[in-house]
Amino acid sequence: MDSQTLRRRRGLSRASISFMNVMSALPALNRMRKRAKLVSIPEDLILEIASYLSRKDQLHLGMSCSRLLPMILVPLYKNVSLTFARRNSSGHHTLWMLENTRALAQHVQTLSLRIHAGDAAATSKLAHVVCQSLRGALENMDLLYKFEWMSEEIPPEDDIWRVLRQSCPKINSLGVCFGLDLPRSDSQVYSFSNLKVFDLHLAPPFFERFLGEGRYAHSNMPPLAELWDMLINRCPDLETLSLNGRSFHPTACHRLCDGRWPNLQSLTLGDVIVNWDEANNNELPDFDGKERPFIRFLEHHPRLKYLNLIGSTQSTVSLDPLSSEALPVLEYFAGGIHHVSKLPNRTTLKGIRVTTPAFGSQVTVEYGLIPALKEMTALTALELHIVLHPELVCDPLFLSHLANACPNLESFDFVCGRASSVTFTAFGDILSHMTKLKRLNYRTLISGEENLQNGSVALVETIPSLQWLKLRLDKFEGAPEGWARTALVEEATFVISRGEANAVDSMRRIKFRTGFRGPRRNMAPIERTISGLGIGLNRLDLMALLFDFRDERASQARKSIAYMLVMTVVTFLLMDCLLGGSFRAGISWKLFSWLGGRL
Image 1 (cartoon, rainbow, N blue to C red):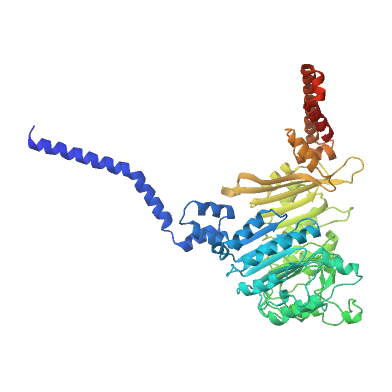
Image 2: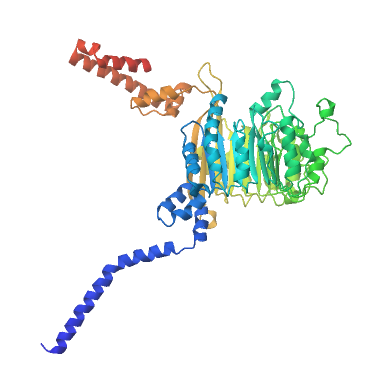
């Protein structure tokens, strides 16, 4: 073999060895390249991606890489909402961690606490426990700007408000709840200033307190007078104000009309009275021929974009006469049907919510709802509640006028509290004129043979642009003797994907709920007993067994109970044959006696 051939073979062998080394190193190189891509992403881009993920997915993303975890902690703990229902709930562990780990607490920007332990005494004890950890956690939250305390009572330790104000210099959003025990006149909750958002929730005990004393709450009372002094005098830049609470015995908030906030953009009023005359024995004054204080208040706030007047006492708030130049940029309104026709500048409205307790088609004509909706050319979202007289039905003519008045709707929530004469197919044909409708929430009461499955298919097929559907059906059925009539609720939510020419590609059900609405027995002890015996009965089967003997689930439940009893008797007979009299006096006999007592 000559030298040239030998050199050629050596070169080939070296080349093959180098090629094999490169091929074996490719997986490692690919892993390095992928890792380099993930780590090389800028931090602001990672935070932007994480902001679109759920809290659970954010945690999974952070646990995938040690370098990503410090970045993910920012969106993971940016908004913290804790619920306390008992002493050992998960909210206590999170709050304890925020108290003892400053590296986590310093990322918190919004903190919401909801405390409810059943009765008032248990809730008060639980609130004391929460306040012990909350004080230390607030001292670590330098970036906190929003704090909400949602419970039926104020914090038992008033010093919490001082710690919040001193430890969180960026705080500008505050939510608090007034119940049976009101803050003192010198409370620290009235010491805040320069707030932009204030949310006051009036719990049912607040209204019951003054109702038991035979009087209404008014704005000049000691706890409320300091509150309005804080909002009017020390919060000139207020942007969002909410006075929420539901009761048939409202409270007076006439001091609201004295406020002037140039930047106010959102106003929510629950069951409160704003036109109040305390000098006239706390009676509603006569404003005939005079300008109402609340009308004057609305005219002095031209930047209002959101106005919510929903409450049990909507008739106490009047928008007549409202100047045609008032509310020039209003985009969303919620209130009664008598308010809609009084709104000026309807062309700017994008969302309307009407939840008047009772009206029919004739009332809509009387209050001019349809003509008012026709003037709202920018309207894209409408929520309408109809509770008809028992002798009336939801006629198709009213629905046709409604569909023609709102052709650009993208979201429609329609609640009909009586049986409708319009079938699902006819209802879908009427709404098909809304060519941009993507979201439909339809709730009705039916008495025929229509069911949820056929109704949902009919609506999806007849409305070509529909992408999201929530359908709820209420059926009145009989109940066993001694029980009140109940309404069986069937509810489902669907997501629809469409292809070319709006053809339905898939219809996926993401939520489903069925059950009884009305008086219920406490099924927890029965459910624990049966689940302990290994029988496949859930709460729904027990409800069917106890309430509706014609339901298909009742038949299955009775079969399970019968099977359990037969197996118990057979086991007893076998043990008695094998062990004789010793079985009756043994532990097994006591066990079966105990099971028989539980059943």
